[in-house]
Structure formats: C-alpha cells, structure tokens
Image (cartoon, rainbow, N blue to C red):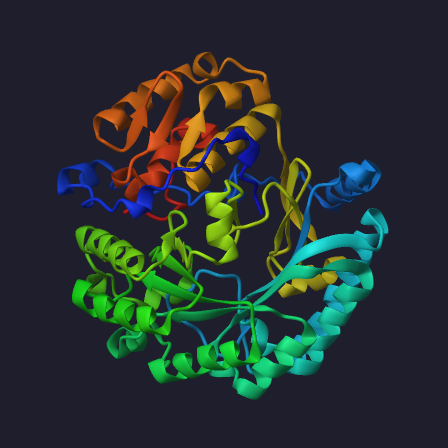
Length: 478
C-alpha cells in the first residue's frame, strides 16, 4: 500500500458532491493518453530487480528497531487461484480446479510468514488484514481457518480491526459466509462488475443478480460490518442505458461501499483480454457518460464519492476517513489507514515497509523455489529517495483529498514548494485554463470536472513519467 499523508492537508474538498457535466469532447481529446492509477508512487513498473530479499529484511529490522515510533501495520495476502477465467481480468491468477493446490499454497504462506517474522519479530500489532486474488474463496474452509490461525499466532490482531476477504458470489452460500464470520472476517467485497446478461456473456462471468442479492442479504443477517461491490464500466457490449440498469439494481442492493473501476483494455499485456473484441468496447465519450451518470445516481442515492473510483455510505469508515482527512490510496484502491506499513504475503504480492516497496515472485514456481531455499521470495522492489517521498505526498494528496497546500507541504518536506516544482506549475496553469484545477498562490484544488481526469493532474508531478514518455504499460485515462 502507499500512503496519503493527511497531516499535510487541510480539510478535504468534496468535489463529487457538486456533480458537474463531464468534460467536453474537445477536452477529452486532449487527454487521450495512458497513465497510472497511482495506487502507489513510484508506480510498480519502476521497481528494480536490484532490490531483493535482503533489502526487505533490512527494512523489517529497521521497523522492529523503531519501538514505540512504529507506523500502523496491515497484512495483505494474495490468493491467486480461480476456477474459471474472466476475460477482463488483469490480476495475477492461476486457473485450476485442483483444490489441493490451495492447501500447498497455505503451507508456503506459512514459510514466508516465518521468514518475515524472523526480521520483524512476532507479536506486531496489526489492525487490517485483506485477502485478495484471484479468488480467495477458492481455498477451502480448513485452509482459510489455518491461515487466519497463523496470522493470529504471529501478529496481535486488533479487536476492532478490519479483516476483509474478496468474494466470488458463485463460490459461497449463507452457511459458508457464517463460517467466514466465525474465522474473524468482518468485511466482504463481492465481485459483480455488471448485472447485464449480455455483458456477462462477453466477459465470461455469468452471475445472476438474484445470487448477489441473496449473498449480500445473508451477510447482513450474519452481521458483517461492511459489504463492498466491485463494478466495472467500459466492458464489451456495455451501453449507457444498460449500465444505468445495473446502477439501479446496485442502488436497490445498497452495499456499504462501491468500487467503480474503469476497464483497462491491454490485450498485449494480459492474455485473457485477447478474447474481448475491441469493436464491442464503448467509445471514450460513452465511458465518460457512464461515469458521470454513475456519480449522479450514486450520490442521489446517498453515497459519498470518496475519490476517483470509490463510493461509500455516509456512516461507513471509508466516508468517515474522507471527511476527517485520513483517506489513503493503496494497491486495493482507497483505504482508511493513513501512512502505514504493509506486510505482503503470497505470489506477486506488493508490500510497503518504511521508505521501500517490495514485490514477490510472480509465478508459483519461482515463489516456491525461493521459499524452498529459505529465502524471502522478493523479485524486485525500490528504496525511495527524498524526491520520491515528496512527490508521493503530493500525488497522494491530489488523489485522496483533491487539494495541496503549498506552504504546509513545503515546510513538511523542507522545500520551497513553488520553486521546487517550477516546471510543474507551468503545466498546472494549462490544466487550470482547461478547468481541471483551481490554482491560487497558496494551493491547488481539483475541480468537480477535474475529478474525471484526476490521474492527469497527478501525472504532472510524476518525475519518472515526465522523463519517460512511453506510457503503453498503463491504462487510458479516458
């Protein structure tokens, strides 16, 4: 996860509660480009193989030596397995029906945990655990219970912590949700993407709406603290009117949180996407209309637009964090834990420890091989420089709060902000003229229209991106 330094921000802007018309086609044409989603800065494509397991071990030992000055700590566990493939998916996954692979994987997660704790020390306080994938519920109940038991044995899990798991609604029933609650999970994230049958057929994920409604209703009866629904706009065969119907159903479902992602069509990088016909994808202006109508429909239904792609009911912890200026952007999207460390377990998992990022081996074979040799399975990573830390603070302030106070940011990082970022201010002036930001002598603020293209605002401060104009690795902004 990456941090959003809330101490550097004043009260957060509320851009999305004042919904404006989307940018004009002329403005959109100026931003027909690819760019990062900024779930971290520097972005993961900047990680280097020179950073390895020894570097992570040193970062873990440094945290252990910090004593009472330790930052918040979370744990992310990546479960890569899926029983079938969804054509839109860009996640690291292993498609298989052999459940025995899951039990073997749990054993190796235990080995990795032991290696990390040898440096960090046992008993560290943790207030967030998230299981992502893939499909975490591919693992059987015995395996998931074993994993949660290992986490409790090695970490001090907070009694009021957030313990979440991503759910494929097709893989659970009410009894299984009860067992997940008994294991300690209190937050669920259901993958939905779209309720339209034709769209589901095009992306190879057939999932009747009544199934999702049943699972969410069961979660409420059982007493889960929060439910999230993932949606994707820009999928093949989607239209503005068909997505309106999906939004209407979602508003009736009324989950606590909604993640609304823009589909990134990168078939040259993600093989499953080659089964999607580009001719069936909606045009950029149709995607913008979907986003605009989604914001309007969800805010009319009482949701707070937390940020670029997340919505939450007013009393949900994510909305509370937004109001209090504690919002945080992580590899899972927007989050409530500001400026913390993250232990990452599992194949391809990305962690953050102090001023470092690390990513595990991306294939099961390499991941297992590292652990068989008694080595942390780190494949690449990055130790941040002072400039990285400053630019991360600025970019996360833009993405999380939509506002940067120049004096506060400069004094926190010991720079003359306007002088340090003089070239960037020239570009900001252009964005201001286009109506995407408001620029004063004291601060910049993303406008309501600017939130449609907030990635373009953040990109102004991305030193790596400005030096390397090749952006084919990223999804399109629009």
